[in-house]
Length: 426
Length: 199
Image: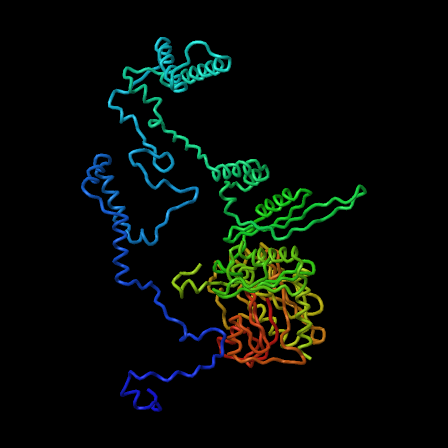
């Protein structure tokens, strides 16, 4: 306490303090002490907490005995245990304060009937020959058995096609044609059905042949009738059509997913014209870079009258041209680099960890695609975009590695970091 | 004047390696010889030989013995193996009849006609010595302490000298213990006058 303060402040603490003189601030932002200090967690009053508990209990009540008996009728004890475990894992208070319902097109049905199979989320039940309690021997059916089976299966199929019974009496032309088509379908399906081809003493064994649960092939997923799903399906179909990509995949021996992982960016776009005696032919030029963010970088050029064509050309060329970039500790270059293309000179400087990519945008994009994290750069002369990109690429590709230098000079090189830092380096 | 000559040597070595020469010559001076030996020690040069106006015979050609002669030597060594070790007068009359390691290079007596022949190295279709640049200038000589050199070898700038940022870059200094590389100076805690950087 200051000595200058009068003694009555000490004796009588209830006296109002003199208003503090406004301090002169030298900064536009509020000084740190003046900022309101708030705890990182919300301060909830006891009464509010009680209210919250009440609401949670009302909104999500515990099961009473009538409900548990109902549940036990519907679910097995294991399922009930799972339900209870899942419900106890989530605090009902959190449900009240934080939970919200999903509204995206991919949301799952919340009220799930666990006694039914959902073909999207649930595993299809699988049965094997051991699940048949009978002698499951079967042989090829003879003609009589085959005719009998076909007629039986065809009737079943017709019943599926006409759930309300086959039309009786006179039919108009359209109906008659439809009926004939249905008959033909039913007969073809019946003839191809394994139940018509094989015969067994036990009916269940024959039925198992047509049962998808016994099949080793997984059933098809149901078609989702959804706008979003349709759109994605269409895009996937379009991609499949591109012959250039197909050739690229063959060339690289890749799958489509591998191509999707590549980071591709078109950095230069401009129009070019070819003057002929017929007139000017305008086309578009594209320069694209491609990298896997982990030490591969490619640059590709494309030119075409059709803009889309040119862009695709450059993208594929970039992916095809990808070359390995040596990286020191997986983050920066080996020493400083310098490369000249035309009137453009690019200087790249390696930097310590955590420095970041402090470069111009073109070199930044290339460094990011190659997976470099610490780099500085200068382009002291011409800054032609195409030449900057080409010079950077050449500089990154043609780095001199310490091992190579040691071999060239006949020196022995030992990486002592492996000793000093317990080998915990890249 | 000596730094002017050194500047000529620097640019001559760069030009020679650009032209992919295997052997080149520079004028002889004590500093050039020491620098050449320093470069050889760092692995930039394959050979440093004092010679005349014409290039010396390559070492391999000098020391080659014919197959019959070689067999004879081998037989003699097998019979009398103690001759493999030097005796006190072995330089005068070699025990095996001839000394296969003596190289005979004719060096003119006239110092004006002497040249220093340097063998250049190449690896993976790239010259080993690609850049060589004078750091001290005839008009501005730069002296550095060992503390400065410690900074420079750790890629930081110090004084008027930029750090050694290229992989495998070397800086040569002339000290009171001869011409040394910067890292060697740091090890021995020596300072000196900077001559040139090589990478």
